[in-house]
Image 1 (cartoon, rainbow, N blue to C red):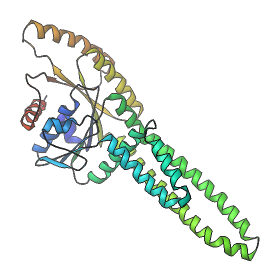
Image 2 (image 1 turned 90 degrees about the vertical axis):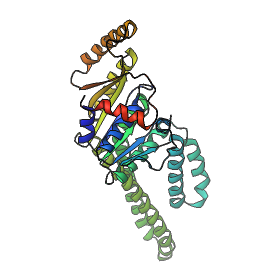
Image 3 (image 1 turned 180 degrees about the vertical axis):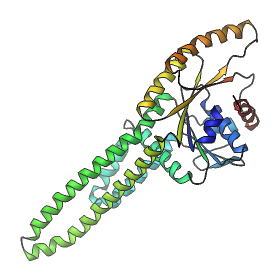
Image 4 (image 1 turned 180 degrees about the horizontal axis):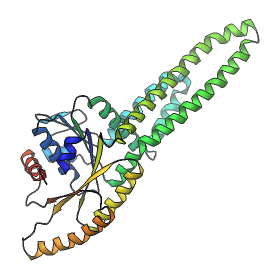
Length: 330
């Protein structure tokens, strides 16, 4: 199930409750597809930076080659917010008069801790990763942060598109009023007309740049929204453990993603207790089956793939490859 999705989609998201093994399953899927000959980009949006730990090497904001065909990137949320606010600040400094720069800087500093800022900044980086990399890779895999963060992130493209569209409409309305008053002032006198003329040129150029920025942002978010909502292009896989809280959180996450228009096409139950392995694991597996019946009753239409618990930690490329082999034809 899982590898079939990875073979048929261009973008694949892995999400779920923290600690269930999203990074491990995403990395194993990415490595297996790369060894099949695909060009794969594995992107982590989780602030825990587990990709670097998993592959036992430094991974940052620029692509790092792991094996032939597989590159990996870790997007740091704090650095992403800094870069995002830096870009916005530089654009505003260019657009606004010098005497307003201190006020802009103060506003940017206050915005750093505003609710939703981290998600908005991360969404910009995801949009850039998709637009910049979709032509270079056969598959882009996103290893996302825990469920609540991911649900908000997946709902943002629609919200940001609508918000930017509203800004553009308000900007156009303000421009029409400004043009009306400029025409009125030009009628006052030829001297006033000459004195205002130069100022109008600067103001009109500034308004034009603002409109261009808004239009570019609208195009970016609209493109991302359309790609995420295309079930032939993008899919979401929820990873969970066969335990009560991860099962309930999976059901809630599925509802949230459906509401956001994201196609959820599979469930991966990680760390399943193997059968015939003694009384303790037998009792554990029996409890897992009870929780998974709750999952099946709530989400009967979703295919499910179970990954057995292994004796050692999944650490290093060889361990990732062994896990990937467990995903084949299951």
